[in-house]
Length: 139
Image 1 (tube, rainbow, N blue to C red):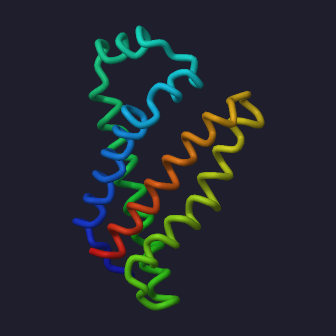
Image 2: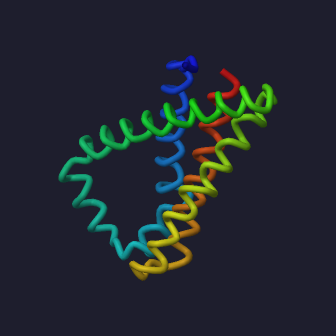
Image 3: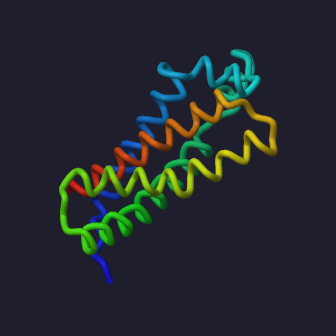
């Protein structure tokens, strides 16, 4: 069984959370809100209602993603040899392309969401998985 570096998993999950805060906040928050059909008052109401539970659930989700990604990075290293940073970058990219980009496509095709929203969300997961894979590979 492959060894998991739990510190790397936690750091990778925190990186994903910080990226999400920035991505859906100052970087692309306004276009994301527009594409989701949210107004500033909707967001203010959500904040007043309390988002702690949502952040905790998202942190657990990020920890699970980082844990599973660590196994994939480990398998990549075992199969192809340790390529340092590129082990994590490539693993994160292929996981994103094979699972995330394809699954999110259903939101455009079947739920009527816009391509712009798809690019925002898929872009977040691409950057997130590449960064998480990089953290895991380097630690």
